[in-house]
Image (cartoon, rainbow, N blue to C red; front, side):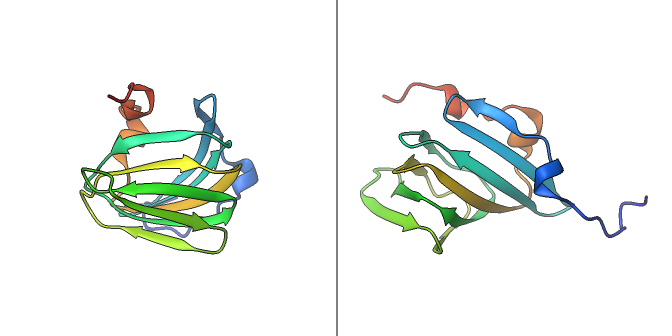
Length: 126
């Protein structure tokens, strides 16, 4: 199949990667975008980080609290049916307020997720 072929994916057939004890994900990657199912258990913290990738986070189930900006002063709760747009290079942190399934769209793809260099999940915050 050539790189420019149409491809069909089924979430149930995509491998589920265990990132931490409280976070799993499934990834679908195209040439210029990435789609992810992110499964967060209540209490899961995604530490503050930033990336060049523009991000859309669509909550299918549950709720996430976000802290936006270097100082984290902007706080938002995003619930099922809502979408958060995070522009490129904006620092952000999240906490799952309940068990949550979110769909993240990134452009360009998150190469740190693909090559395993997304070590911010395992760093202790100061």
